[in-house]
Amino acid sequence: MRHLLPSHPVPEHRYIERVLRHSTDSLVRLIAATSPGLPAVRDLGKRDLSPYGPWALQDVAWVSLALGSETKPAATRDDLAEIVGLYLALDDPITHEPAGGLRLERFLQRVTHQQGGWQESDYAQLSRSVALLQQTPHPDGGLEVIRPGWDHELLGCSLTDYVGLAELVWACATLHPDPRRRGRFAVEWYPARDYVEFDHLRSPAQVKAVLRRHFATTKLRLRTSFPAGADPLVRRYTHNPLRARPLVGGMPGGYLVPVPAAVLGKATPLGLYYTGGDNNSERGKAFTRDVGHLFERYVGRQLALLTDAEVHPEVEYKLPKKQSGKSVDWIVVFPDLVLLVEVKSTRPGEALRLGAENFTTILDSQFRKAFKQVDNSADRIRSGAHPEFDHIPRDRPMVGMVVTAEQFHQINTSEHRSELPSTSVPVTVTSIQELEDAVTITGTSLADVLRASAAGGGAALRPLFQGHTFLDHNAVLEQGWSAIPFARPRDPGTGAAR
Image 1 (spheres, one colour):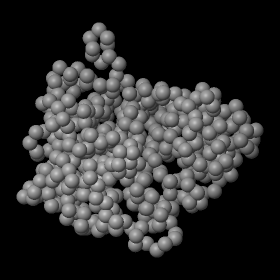
Image 2: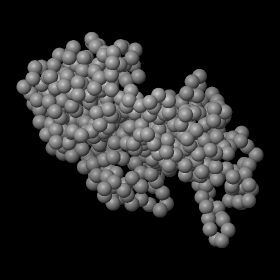
Image 3: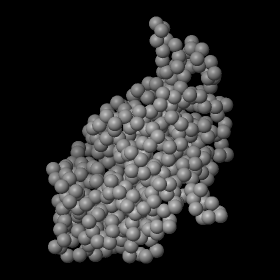
Image 4: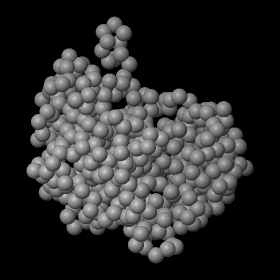
């Protein structure tokens, strides 16, 4: 693929004008035909394909579908190469801000939050959806809306069928044996005999209903919702509606799938969180609260995989005047270390993802309470004044960990940590993805990695994994994966999924 990379920042209007020089049908079909043949995001640079990130291709498709017409000439592969080159060179607020300050950190907030989600393990994310929302025991007090049948009500099918359907569409759009069908999906291509893989989806009509309800969009919908007044310096970092609805209908030959990886995103915990968590409705707010309660218990399930530690739940302790307090959510006791774990199901909001001028203030507001909870729990344990903590050793070093549902990129760097609350014990912010890897470490104790993190003032865990070995699979994720259609074990006698 030929790359034409401008040497100077490109204004957005020039990029959009270049996209609109071609008919929508030809350009979006070209994107859909190109996407399946690209390597994983982490390997794009090795193949000299850096401009072809899924975020870039999806933006080109969005602009073309929303603003383009069918009266223009057809696009070629060289045209697409030039367009993604322009995208890569788009102007950014960093070129307009005075030197110094946190301009670079703000730029990195935009880039890492735009691109990071595309680089997570599909296996881990899809498995986590089932392990979190279906296989994690509910808290003693119950949940508000995530109750038996919640998935059929919200999704139109079971959770596992929903995840399996996303896998099916992705596989057809990416790996179809007929190259002419890659980048597209039609229910009619799917053999009726294979519906046995699903738990409840039994007909093309049922599949179409779920796709229309959650996965599909149209050119008209994209055209009427395009943010005409958006800041041209940051529009590409804002929400792309093809992330929420990655199938484009209304075209001959079935649905067009410009970026198949976005289909899997619908079935990840984040995709499901936004599907059910409409903050404009009381039910949506209740759904997000329920997910938060389940996430806390899910973290406990992950910690329980540690073979050289005891895991204790939250401790409620007495205070004067008949008051009471609560510790961090989980306390992990190693032979030579105590880990205090506070769980936050919070996710980076748009202002943080766009690198707002006050992004450090946003981080402080999101994490201050969690950091203080770690510090307060450490003080209560050390004091020896609360018998409720007698089962927790006081003679060992303590470190803290705040576990988040999604990545907060750059948060453990020195530039960001200086803006977060100071604590008496080192605290690292760890995404659930990092924790799922951390608990499978072999050949050494996770306590050794935690000590190295503490020595770095709460350094991120993932860079410290280098040189260590891990189990091939996380048992909690493997259980989730085995429940998904097309992934679950098969009955040798019939070939059907068990």
